[in-house]
Image (cartoon, rainbow over all chains, first blue to last red; front, side, top):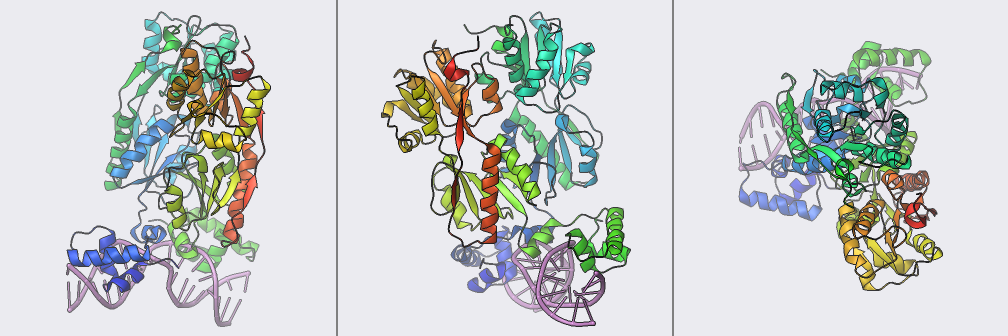
Length: 300
Length: 300
DNA sequence: CTGTTAGCGCATTCAA
DNA sequence: TTGAATGCGCTAACAG
């Protein structure tokens, strides 16, 4: 049988309340008592029942990252959340967990899901480009920087692949005709591959992908078509993934500091939890282009 | 104010018990009543409080996948779990969540963590090679198939990179000297890259990596060293990742059917939950080599 | 087939 | 600074 607060209290000869105080790091416990309680906890291998705690307190201390969530970013969110006494879970959909808040990548949300999530009443922080006035938002719009980089290396016929490539480019002040745009539902390489095959018929000299994994498929499609990257077609991704860095050619990518994104997202989350009815906030995180072989010529 | 069972019961003019029955799909509810209750639920936007449910029932219906967990496998576990009325969360560490069971990739566990997890009393299912007699286990040992494949294409000086490369090869009946073995803590491409740089001094003609992501770094290291893949050095990974499939050269990999692994793991989980004190079980899932360019010559 | 009710383990209000 | 007692929302045992 698993130990309860009551068992610890009996062993330590104190009340339940005192044990609770110790467990939750309340200040007003005498050192003597605290030690006795701590020992009892050890001895009984007491672990708080989180379901009970969540029920009673109305808070679970859990922050959900809704998949798909970039692993490189998740890493930072997890480590920073720990120092803020929040624990992180990654959930496949917005499943009914007793969570305090959720982080979502706005750009890959299927239509309509955001409404459903909002209806749940759970505080939401959106990451990415698509703006939504109804919730907090860490904004990150890489298309502009990507296009600027491609223009700077002399590319003219810039195509785009991703969730909302037309809108992204448009916001970046760059308009392209429809045949230079391919929308993908997900961000797997296979989707990039297929999109690129279609795109290549129109002879772009550069392809911007709103995710590195898409870009890896794009590179393969370009080279399979007998074209060279970057000589014939330059490719830019987003996110600075490990795989892109070690691909051949290595992938030029647009990225923000993931620690920065994580910090902003957690700041917004904490602020929201402290003041649930505050106006939705929005912060913009800066990003940089990391030029690699896919836009500047192979190392050999 | 969020609606409770009681509110629904009042609106639907039935008892709390009946509402609970409807919510939990108990059979013995008349259609008429069921409809009234369902409408009340809709009208009040009632959502069960999962903390309360977990506290009361002692079960959360949650299966945790402990990260790092291969995304391609997680996908199958998630979809299959849904049809078994289990929900899945991915947790960064074995954090104190009210979970019913956890799936762990055995080969990447830091030493000592398994003991800690076992001590928690949570049912555990291990996936991978490293055997542990204390818990259920879906066994998968790709090294043998990888080595056989490399031998079949005439390779002799086979090196290995991964979590326990020496042991893996040894179990596969293939012994290598220490300079052909590099152990990595994680499975990121950078670790494969560094391991391969060291390995290349000893002129292997093949490198087996116990994970595709490692292998991508290895390929880059080999080509950066001015050697060709596969002509000079063949490379084999494990896991059939999307990135490996679209890399250049595309990555030969050893993989089991992820749907099969997921099914076995969930079968073991369900059996364990049904009979917590049963003897630990072990199932072996078959795997196949998927030959691609990294062992058979580039497409062009 | 449906109503009534007792706790699950904990945080917390009110006393002391 | 600590103790006793209440109830969070729900499931399930018991009753009808």
